[in-house]
Image 1 (cartoon, rainbow, N blue to C red):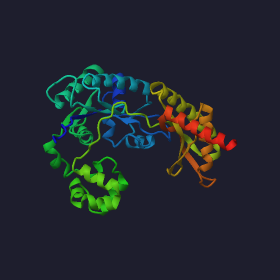
Image 2: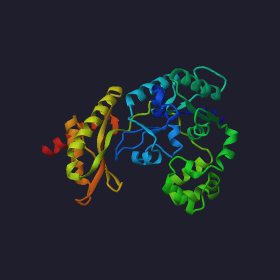
Image 3: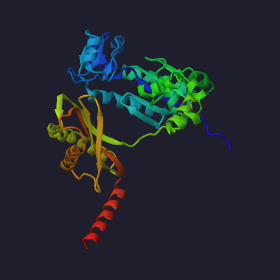
Image 4: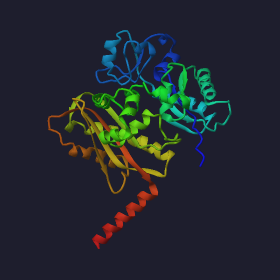
Length: 371
């Protein structure tokens, strides 16, 4: 049996995307530390320019902390309609080279260029062509990683940021990964990193030495996956048009609220999520969501979710909102608990024909009992 041909994967990541769009469109912001965020005690940073990152400002940190780290920062409220328009423009550039595109967010995507539309000689040349077109047509910069799989391409795209690219050829993988910190591996957060440190595992070389069986005994299937990543193994294909798993909306409140005060907020968020769900149905009418999800974050940052999968999916926005509000009864925390954030979503997408068949089955069962 012959081996499968080696994939050629590019991970393209726009540089400080939201902040760069703001600096492009407002020349007075160029060269200044720009923080894309609403001001306020509950706001978080959506993006930070490289000038702001020098001061330690990062995405997802509280805006008040960003202001403390960089008092001279210019705060700009996000304009997602504008960012989405630029993202579509960049997507059009990708599509000149391949249809195998898997967006991860507005500012990054995987591309499989194993069989490109235009043979430019190499995946490296294709990545360069894409970055040149982005610079010329959007006046923004992007970084790229080129590698045999998605995991390696994503790591490589971060290697020469901003406005650079890095190639990981198959022969380079073992030596490149050996000294790489385990914190760089996808899915290894602070908690997992600490658990690995207790086992004297700090690098991919340490993971390899510990062994796949030992890692699996400690961490289950995730342990074996870590061992595979330490060797550069990742068989995941680029998935164009990856189906939506959940449509949701969430909001952080101006002040912490008790559970009894959340109904109006939940209904407001349900309206936003339902609008997003209707847009998703327009794109994929064959898929419907059956599960209602309520997400809450307490004042001490504990996150909990409650969900309900009924026999039939919510028929309208009101039914969806009613179900989300009803999930408060299953929170199970002391009456004095206060909450800083709420989120409402629809998940559990299934084929509409399958859902209808299940509905008919349940209806038939009810009819038999009634008879």
